[in-house]
Image (tube, rainbow, N blue to C red):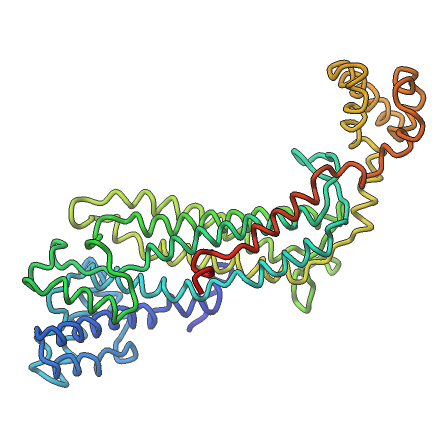
Length: 453
């Protein structure tokens, strides 16, 4: 496929090929071939006509630039495609030309072609590598303590294993939603002019059944020309998944800041450098994912607004969809591939994580001290006391436990051993490990489809 500089961050090679002109056109032609075969089986068109259509429907035989130009005038790509196919069939078998696109409408071709592309996309969006890497990170760092951070400020400690498990849980839930949405969206579109298949008389439903089976698609209860909820749910699921990946990307990029320096993306020749600053190691995987999230969220919103389609055939809403769907799927692919690469090669500096905890001089353990004092003093009194103590600790650049050790209202209730261990992060992790294990166990549960295998 021809590379496009503007799309360098917008797609992957596989997905660029999937939504290339040749691929889109071939999906449309595949519909026409399958339709002819189904109608030949029903005795509606001659078998020889179906064979001629099959032999002619190859994307490389057509001028995609000319088709694109004609589509703007026609109002849909399907019309020039059907015309061009008909002419090529006529050159091969004049009698067969009259049976091209028999009983179908333009939207049947376009929608089913789009669904066929989405079916291929489902198999290409592989999240297993990312999930496995996150699981390994979580297990390897189950006991790696680090600062919790709330509103961008230091908070009581957590473990990096819990953080990685949180990313994993969100990704896994996103994949489950995506699987369900794909299963609902991968359905045939075949309704004819007004969605009744009236042109095929009483054979319409039988042809639809055969056509769906031939294309490997589910047969919906009825055509869905202006009912776009299935596609909307699929794109929304993509948006949620990309949002989860972007949350991970934001976390990693913040942890990569030189002032924090707790993790780093994998490095390599030409990766994450700067045109002017040789020392730079930029979070390029995170950057690509965050850029994708900006695009995908806007595209999902655009699709949702286009759902309001009139009666039995929409004016403008349906015609807006193809580039939106392509953008969402390609953006999702970029985010998945980028974060899989980040997770696979992520470096974790546990010593730096410990040092950043120590750099707070124990301030993050003010809550712990408050909760130890609360049964004796009451929570409100203990809270006010620790606010004042924390301010003094910061102002004097002294450790919190040392300031507390000089306060009779504290030492009367907390002994030296308790104060000495106050700032040990391992002793104030609460249920971090329980939650981490629960997230991993949930992430490891098979989907319903996996259970049946």
